Image 1 (spheres, rainbow, N blue to C red):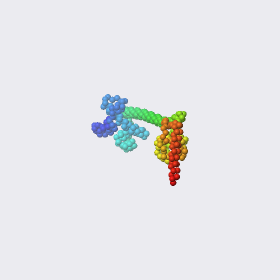
Image 2: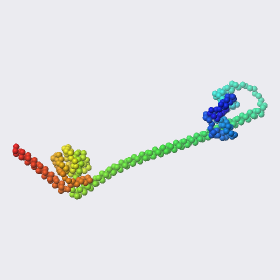
Image 3: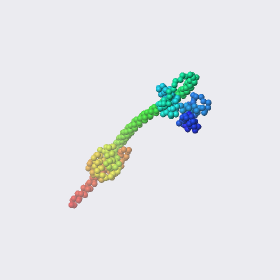
Length: 344
């Protein structure tokens, strides 16, 4: 007996108990679509018949493999005549397996005297009944086979579709990785080009600056003036920077800001400038003069972008005045020292 409900009705359980038969219930209720699919090749008059047939086919499908195995085993042993009984014993759990069912039947079987079959009509009906059952079994097996083949085709189609999708995803990922690598390469090239461009710009800037300095220097010299290198402060770092940029040997320098420093004066003297211009007389004037460097005080300069400039004539006059003042200062000191010596 079969039910189309996972939880079989109480009446079905009672009938099974009365007729001593097994009750089949599906794992979950058979849905309308599933019932229609199961019975689509069998004509039914109404929904009740359809439900009953669907339940029967579902029950048969659950045991058809076992039934087929029983037939194959009995055929190999030449015991086809025991088929119906052994199937009943295995399905109803009277026997655990085919071997146990055969053993139980052989124990119960008693030798009977052979009788001559005289009732051919009854024998014919029995054979026709068995043939009908076999035909029905065959139709059900054919139906199960079709269902299985269709399911296999669906699974194969799903498998193929999934394989294509995985292949597409793999190809997409491969293309993305190649694209990312190409972008990374281009970014590296762009960074290199930017670095080279910056270096070239810096180089061009230095060349442009050098050209502007040279042009300004030529302009000052062509106007008959003396170019003067302007130094912001009197310290070693600033002097070293200006020396690297202009070169101080034989040059005329003007110091905007002055802070006394004997070590700075010695460092400057080693670079051998020609003339130093200050706003006021530096404390290291005598030290610098010992190195042959001329000191000039309080000159008015004309300032350009890179240099300052002074007229050659004004510079010469200032240097002569500076020498005259120095000579008078020396003479005054000399006379004072000589007078003191005479009195002593």
